Length: 132
Image 1 (cartoon, helix red, strand yellow):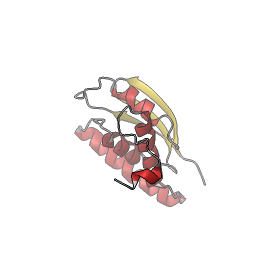
Image 2 (spheres, helix red, strand yellow):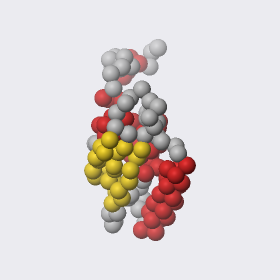
Image 3 (cartoon, rainbow, N blue to C red):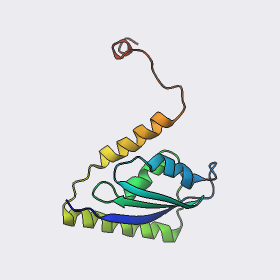
């Protein structure tokens, strides 16, 4: 299966409690399968190199917004996203990439959940959890 690397920029909104969203997003995405390289340009801009046979820009942006990052939604960036989504879907269909979006997205959320500090861990054995 051919590997097609894409380089895209992700811009974050200035209105967010995390003033350095690009660095936080880099830490979240660094161990995701299919992401080849990440580079922080400034606190609101992240450059992502990824293989479209594993995931596309829409998958990355959906995962980021799902966990609370705010992407810049100016008209120009929305048009670019729409064009990138269309071309990447078409390119994947043409080369026959069978990427599993659910698997990659799930891996992102699992990695984020395991790194996050919270009190949602149930230390009881699995057979005890059924008796609530």
